[in-house]
Length: 195
Image (cartoon, rainbow, N blue to C red; front, top):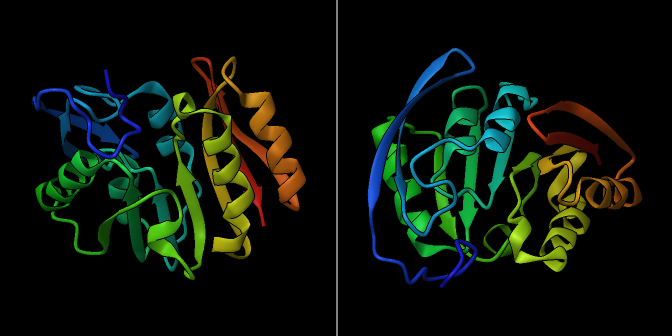
């Protein structure tokens, strides 16, 4: 059984449309088997989206975008969004979701973590990380984030309280000037690390 954190998920393709109202805006998303959170907007992502810090002139990276909920919502509030994922099916579905939601100020790129944005910087990196991919992937996300952020830029990350929140917060404290908990609820915490 392949996991959603794989390049080519080997589960049969099934899709399901969902509609959500979040941050006062209405969105429609195609979700897919083999891509994180099939058939729903998961609670961690919802908590992150409701509380993510966004500014109009920002350039944002949605790292590990899945079907694209974080980046697509962010695109309504910021200047430009780059969305990346290692899962080719996720990239394909996220591109369809850009069209479904008539998003013109975002793009989706395929690749492992920061590879598709080599040499680029952002005002914020926003992610619901693939916890089941293991601690090495989580570590790579956190320790490499400052190299892709402008000074004062933010890494915004949601993590299940009992699945690594303490570990992530500790890593962030080692690699960022300041770390704040910006939200918690339903067994999740949202942290912002200031570069």
